[in-house]
Image 1 (cartoon, rainbow, N blue to C red):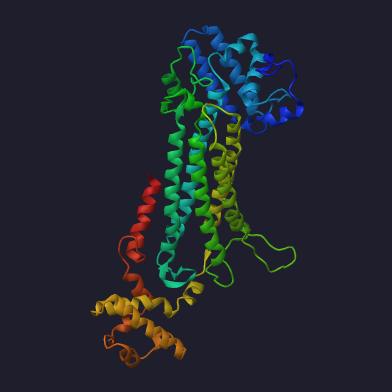
Image 2: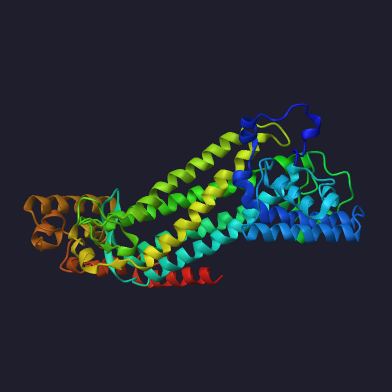
Amino acid sequence: MSKLWGSRFAEQTDALVHRYNASIGFDARLYDEDITGSVAWAEGLAAAGLLTADERDALLAGLEAVRAEFAAGAFAIVPDDEDIHSAVERRLTELVGPVGGKLHTGRSRNDQVATDFRLWLMRACDRLDVALRELQAALADSAAALDLPLPGYTHLQHAQPITWGHWALAHFWPLARDRQRFAAARRSAAVLPLGAAALAGTAFRIDRAALAVRLGFGDVTANSLDAVSDRDFAAEFLFAAALLGVHLSRLAEQLILFSSAEFGFVRLADAYSTGSSIMPQKKNPDTLELTRGKSGRLIGHLTGFLATLKGLPSAYDKDLQEDKEPVFDAADTLELALPVMAGLLRTLELRPERMAAQLEAGLLATEVADYLVRRGLPFREAHQVVGRVVRLSEERGVAITELELEALQAISPHFGPDVADAMTVPAALAARDLPGGTGPGAVRTQLAAARATLER
């Protein structure tokens, strides 16, 4: 079969140019969306009086036969198939004869591919939402160890005591925002371009609103020029994917640290670890490292695609063929990474004894400052007082909790015998039992809110 556009040309396309131009190698995965869109278009043509009922039925039967061939892995791509649209139309015509040539009436590959791509992306957002929810559920289940204390860090230095539940939920809420971003990308995609034709709109009285309902779109595009060139939805998807990659990378990085010998707060299951070809004792967090590494790949897809879009004139340009591979790869990457991370979390072993060993008294310095505030000292002055207490403890080589009351009172008379009550981890946690805090009651409330979001 010659190319759909070949009659205007006197020479055959150079073989290398054909390879360069063809997209069938990656857009074949749009076969289901392409056939779904063509089924709706055939029904629209019939409703507009452009096909007889018999012609419509022949096209629909032929399209379903082509779909079945793809689903069974029996569809044979031939050298002249430059994209999924020409491949489907070529095979359809082989099956149903000349009536196959009527399917493209009033339609361009420009609005056809935009429709296919939007349908595919809408489905991808739905799949990713399910996978994201499973990862959130794994974090929520892990957060059930909500009273387990461990050091909190800023600048990767000991800061204040927190609980494991609070730490786990700190990674739950970014995923909730990620789900919102994918939902927004899906809404952006759910606007039907079919009927825009090449750029000026179709010349036939096709009911575009009915097509939108038939295909599950929420609206139709308002401008045919914009319809065939708009790839905002793809950019929004890639942004959501890139930011999700960043969130997964941060989670992976912290678990890499926590599973190291220096921390030892968690132990990774063997099923989610690898070994060394030379060092028999090694247990490497390769799963987490791959997750961390793939975030760079996702960021690259976003920046590369935005660079592709930035200089395009109106309507369709071949540059837009570069839209699918980054989106496909981003979706594929996340559809593998998300369940892997969920499985890793569900098999993660917590090590409370190692966490407790790192709960040194320096983590309680802020509690001492807060104690002085409650005794009437302005916070800035209290901060300076506790700084001198910390310096004295370092000079003596003891923890601040080991300094005698007389030494503390020599620094400030505001210290009383009850200061020891403030310098404990349970007291530090209990003091922060307000919404969003790391106190036990607050984390229970937060966990209940997290589970409620999963139910919604």
